Amino acid sequence: MTDAPLDDLRRAVYRPVRSGNALEDTTARIVQTVRLGLVAPGESLPAERELAALYGVSRDTVREALRELSDAGWLETRRGRYGGTFVVDPVPRPSGPAEVSAAELDDVIALRGVLEPGAAWAAAARSLSAEERDVLWARHEAAARAEGADYRRLDTLLHLTIAEVAGIPSLVPLVADNRAKINAWLDTFPLLPRNIDHSTSQHASIVSAILAGRPDAAHAAMRDHLAGSEALLRGFLA
Image 1 (cartoon, rainbow, N blue to C red):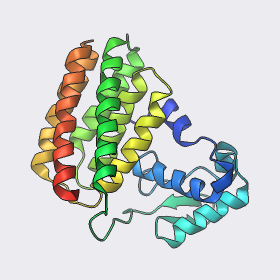
Image 2 (image 1 turned 120 degrees about the horizontal axis):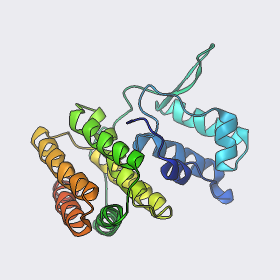
Image 3 (image 1 turned 90 degrees about the horizontal axis):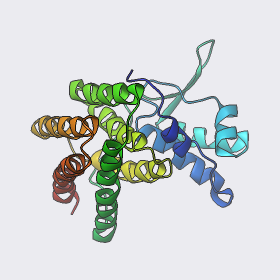
Image 4 (image 1 turned 90 degrees about the vertical axis):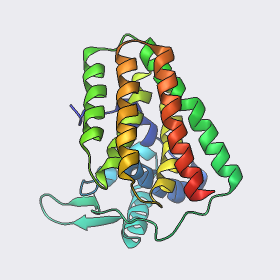
């Protein structure tokens, strides 16, 4: 169940790019799929032809973007029957702390504080299908079991699943773009085991409130959870 497709999220990430900066936007969108965990380390990207159709660009543009990311150490090409373009394992991590302005940090954190608690509230207010309930709980369990570098990818997928089951398609790309920025910063400092344990407990509260149909409790639990992430981000980046 944890591999069930996130349809709204995939549509949000694999959407046509702006024509004026096609190469840069295509490159950034491919990086976003990796940062959000839609394509995990060691997994293959869609074929060039499919990416070109999804992004609304030429295959030459896709090929150039893939070449850029291969040269940067993010992707590798494998030949043969089971070949393709694969995300390297492990994905390269920044060598030093991120340079983030106070204004940008405030903006991204504030937007997250609006989007994600709202998504949790909306998800809890809906009558979720059996499949949605199963996928949501499975994502929570996968994040709870995750170790090491895999934790942030599965943590991200849980948060994005909450956005998707909120039932507001236009919300998903906003959460995805915001989370991609958050993940780029999180990747610059180490995983903290006690923080992960605390986050797992908070995830359980959020998901349980959603599944119980308690919107206010889901909103409050997500707000508490994000407060912890904000403290870490400001501590490491401010």
